[in-house]
Amino acid sequence: MGKKRIKKILITGAAGLCGSVLYDGLLRLGYKVIGCDIQKKASRAANNLGIKINKNIKIVDLRKLNKVLKITRGVDAVLHFGGIPRHKPNEDVYYKILDHNILGTYNVFESCRANKVKRVIFASSAHAIGYHNRKKKLNDKSILRPDSHYAVSKCFGEALASLYADKYNIKSMSIRIGSVLPKPTDQRFLSTWISFRDLVQLVDIGLKNKKLHCSVVYGISKNKRAWWKNKSAYKLGYKPKDNAEKHLRQIITKNESKDKIALRLHGGVFTSDGYKGNLKDILKR
Image 1 (cartoon, rainbow, N blue to C red):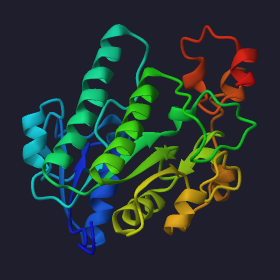
Image 2 (spheres, one colour; image 1 turned 90 degrees about the horizontal axis):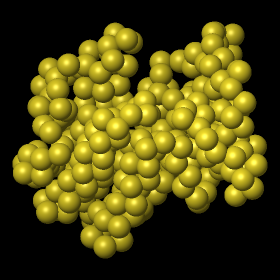
Image 3 (cartoon, rainbow, N blue to C red; image 1 turned 45 degrees about the horizontal axis):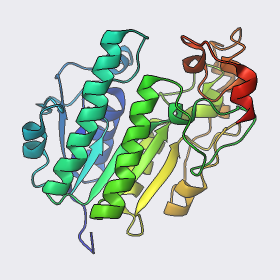
C-alpha cells in the first residue's frame, strides 16, 4: 500500500443491513463509495429496521468472475459483505452458500489481486468460532470451530484473507461480527452487540491503519459481558463508544433460555440447529 491514501471503496452486499450502514457512514467520513449487490431491493434485516439503501448501487452477481473483475477495477479497497447471511438446513441452501459465499468470496479476492486492489475488509462471523465452550473467553488466536455451513464459508474467507495477505500483500481485516443492531434486544446481545457507529469506526480503522497486514478482530462494542477479547482491534486503534449494558432495561427476549446446547456454546442456537453431537466431546476440545 505504501503511503497511498484509500479514497475509493467498493462495498459488496450494499443492500444488506451492514452494507447499508457502512455505505452511509463511510460517505459521511469522506470516502468515495460505490456499492453492489445481487439485487437493489433492501434485505429483510434492513427493511425491518426501516433502513433505506443507496439508490446508486449496481447489480453484480459475485459468482461471475468477469463481473467482479469489472466492478473492482480502479478501487482502492473492497469491503466484502456480500453473501448468504444465514440458513436453515436443506440442500438447496447449502448449495447457495457454496455458490455465493465460497465462489463469490474467491472471486472478490482474486479480482483484487488481478486489479491491484491492496486492501480487503472481510465480513466474517462469530459463528466461525461457534462450537467453543462459552465459559472460555476467546481471542483472535482461538481456533476456528464453525457451527454451521454458513460459518464454514466464513472460515474459508478468513483463510483466503490470510493467503492473499501473505502471498500477494493484499492487506486484510477479517471482522468476526457479533450482532449488528440499533440496540441490543435479546439477552445474548448483551455480549455480542455492535452498534452502527462502532461498526463504521472499526471498518474505517481497517481502511486507514498503515501497520495492518492480516488481522482478525471481533465486531463488538465495548460490552461489559463480552465473550471475546478484542485486543487485536484495540491494538489497531479501535475505541468503541457504545456498551450494551446501557440498554439492559430494554432487553425483551431470551431466545436461548430453554436451549441447553445453545447456552453452553458461543454460537448459540446455530449450534443446536440440526444438532446430533456429543456435548461432552465438544467441551473437551
